[in-house]
Structure formats: C-alpha cells, structure tokens
Image (tube, rainbow, N blue to C red):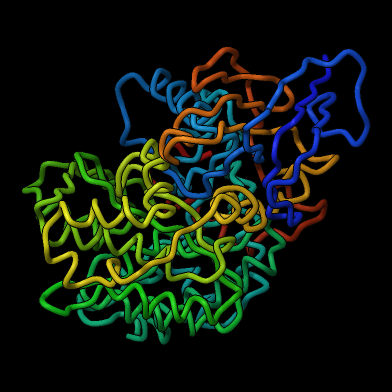
Length: 498
C-alpha cells in the first residue's frame, strides 16, 4: 500500500485537545504514522480543516421493513455516508430473531465500518432476573445475546413498558403487571449488568413514554434514577416534551438533569421537515402511530412476543407539534454543556434522513440562520420552546466532539477511531474552509478510509469494504442458565434466528 501525506491542514481533534493545529499527517498501511513515509501520495490541505472520519452512533439502515431493492439501498447508504465524511455507523437495533437479516444487510454496505445493537427485550426471564437483582446473570445473558447475534452491544427499548396495565402518566415508576419491579428498575439494573458483562459500550436506552406530553418527567426520573450507571439515551429529543399549551418543549429541564449526570451520553434525534418513515420496536408507540395513520404502515411479529412497526409520516413546518419538535431538538443540543456527550442524529429515518446532518450542523453553528428558520415555521414553536432565547453558537471543535471523539469514546473505540493520532485508523475527512457550514459538511474535499482516498469534492472515486464491528466474549465466558436459553429457543418465533 502506498503512503499518504496530508500537508498544510489545520487539525481539529478534540480527543487530544487540538484546535486548528497546523501540522502534517502521515499515513502508512491504513494507519496514521508518527514518521514520514517514502514517496507518498500528497494532499495539499491548505485552507482546509482536517478531522477524523465521522461516526454515527445511532441510525436505522438495515431494518427488515426496508424491502425492495435491498442491496442497492445498502450500497447507496454506505456511499452517501462516506460522501458526507462519515466512516463508521451503528445500526441502532436488531431484534434477535432478525439478527441474521441484519448481518446479511450489514455485509452489503461499503465504505464505512459498521456494527449493530441487538435488542434485549422485556422477556419474562429477563424481568425475573431484574426482580432478583441478578446483575451477574443478566450480564452473561447480555454478552451471550450480543455474540450470538454477531452484534456489538445491547439496546433496551421501552423497558418493561408493554407489561404496564394501561397507558398513563408517567410510567417510569409504575409496577409492571405480574412483577414486583418498575421500568426504572429494568433500565437501571440492565444498564449495570451490561457494564458487568464487559461489552464494548454501555446499553443504549430507548426511554419510556416516547412522544407523550409527560415524556420529560420519565426522562428526568430515568436520568437521575440510573444512579451513576453508564448508559446512552437514544433520540433524547423525543423524550423532552411537556404539556404547556397542550404540547411544549421541556428540553432545558431534561438538559439540566443530563448535565448533572456525567455517566450518560445521548443523541439528539433531531426532526427535519418532510416525508419519512418511522420504524420502531416500541409496541406502545407503534400502535399509536398505526392508529394515527389508519393502518397505513406495516406490523410484523418477529418472535419473543415482540412486534416491529414501519409507518409513513410527514413532519410539516405548518404543524404546531412538528414545529415544536424541530425546535426542541436544537434547544436540547444547545443546552447540554459538554458536546462530547450529545451526538448528532435524526434517529434515521424516524426524525428524517441522515443526509440532513450538514443542515443540522449549520443550525447549531449559526444563530442568525437558526432564527431565520424558526421565523418560517408555525409560530407556536417560538412560544412553547426556548430556542429563540438561546444565543449559543457551536464551533468546529465542538462539532468534531459531537460527531467524532464523543461517539468514539461512547463506543469504546477511541483508541483507534475518532482521533488523528499515530496508531489510529487512517479514517480522515478534510473540509474546505469558507462558505456556509452546511455546504462545507455536505461536500468534503477528501475522505480517506483506512488510508485510501475514497471521496473527492463530495463524490465517490473508490469503494472499499470496511470492517464489521462485533463483540467477541473472552474465552470461557459464562453462558446464561439453561432455562433461559431454553426459553429463548422456544419463544424465538418464525424470525430468522441465528
């Protein structure tokens, strides 16, 4: 493999405290080198910003609801991510019975490293272990599930929520039917168990009461109730709603609780206007969306008593609720003190497409642009959110923390990704300075994956395979008890159980 020299660029690397440091980067054999290489290919990055490749820690790209031309869609996904400067993505959830479908589709995606999270459902044996506070056995179950699915770590969706007797305000501390535990117990004990299971990264939590006007209460109580356990809060914007005026943003209150609990990370789940499709394994939410669209979506039972939903939806700028959702996500991101703990996402495709990331970045960096966009949408967004009062503008160093170093630390890969230090993977994005931030982040000058230039001026010039990130348990790792394995085999349903 030929060497590569990137010269004259200004390096932005939050993991190592580098703010626009003018230095050369040497690449050899797919890694960043601490010594010059002979006869390298040279990229002159004069007037450019050099960052590590972007990392999307929360996206839905392989969901089985996406039928049709699957291979073409997977290839297009990898190409489009890379053309925006991203080199690593994480599929946010895969139900265990569909793990082989997820693995097959992940293998089709070029250009980026990718991994998936397997869902640990609120199955009866899981809830019994939670009742007994048996974190050791839960940890071994989490490890076994992840390895069995060929996944990277664990996702927990609406913890225990389908065992509540009825919907109501808020659910987080209500006792589950047939069990002497609450959703908060499930979330906190499983979070500690995932840590005990030595998985690469903390559990990703899809919190209870998503979208409800009391969701902020459940979010705050979960944030405080995790009591120091590490966790990642998925699409947090969807859990920041209150009932002022019928529907409002309570993002500031959620951010205050989040700021005080440094054991947590989150991604935004930013809403963008336009047509999309919502995909979820949250049965309560799925049924609500299905009802709102008069059954226009798809509902699939996949085993273990779980159901996955895919429902078409349109976010409209002239809708008060949708406008408040849009403003809420930006308010949340701007109200969190440490940008390395809040990651940019749209919960693709639930809040909109991942291709909207450059615009979201501009909204976070440009107060004038943000206010102009706020003035164009339903006026209730100005009354029932605090977005217009926020003067904060993020800088490139903070954006790099949200899209590079922060996700790398959360995923446990900061020793080789999300930074530009010798020994790290040569996943590098070079952006031309000048112009508006949306244009800059939409069209990188160069993208390098594992030392190979794959994108120039926002267009693909070469394709690479990338790596599939998986969890490999330590030799001799304990399997869960036979009765739990038996239950899983018995209740797996007709899904493609690996």
